Image (cartoon, rainbow, N blue to C red):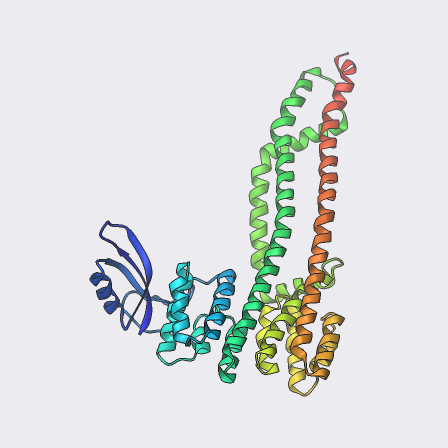
Length: 411
């Protein structure tokens, strides 16, 4: 029995969208008609961007969700799943409860397909592996370890903590970056509006004087005229340039060089290392703590390291660990990870508490990252005020200087 996304019309002609289970799309259509609905489309649940058209034939390929579940949804569902299993429910019953209280179509669709796969005999981990965009390797490997050890509820509880912490950190970083972005956008908009709409009207007063205007005023007028004539072209060119830049650095070679440059750039180097090391430490902690072998944990943890240079270093460290080198020593040899992480890993290996040490190091690096971002944002506001003040002062001076020399200009 599989899960199918459907769209149907009710008796009032309104479109209804949902998820139904059945052996074939034809059976689901029959169920919908029995409920008084007119089917429009019935498609097997499959992943967005999978490139395989399900049509409505009921073909039974790998079922993956057409819409990716958000990290916030995954965090809430993982916590609820852990609670339900801890209360004594079976996996199937817990999934049924989660489906019943799912608030979005994406989560309901994904969970329905997972439950269908489980009912067909797949393990929970294998059922979740059909949804790689929602359940990453970290998640499915931890669930597989929990199923093998019989502590799935505890593993899900750790995963819930992990997803909540990761989502919270992303939100805090995003919120910290939103304010500077809108401040810059507002400042640029105000300056451009002054130059295009205000300055031309003010300086027009001096056009008939016949006298030479001050250099600053002439420069301001020239820049204003340039923006009026070529501003749209410059904006379009900047947009095209940005798109070309993004497409170029999507290639692995240029992207790796860019990431290497960021690791050498003062001010960015420590932040990039801290962000990626915190992600790696947090991910490795949850996997090792769930009982996943170290090498498998390291391989799954590579995905959360966004900097390609650091990812290559991590792959090299994994190779050395496979050859018998300790994790702490292997990370130290790469020279890409902070000393704090290396020391905590070494301590965890010697004490047998690697997951706890990794978790503590991740927390310390996350606090350091948040403090650094707070300092940057705190300094950004007064710097932007000074820059805006200097720009506005320049515009005002360029307008006032001819007024101060008005008698001379008239004469």
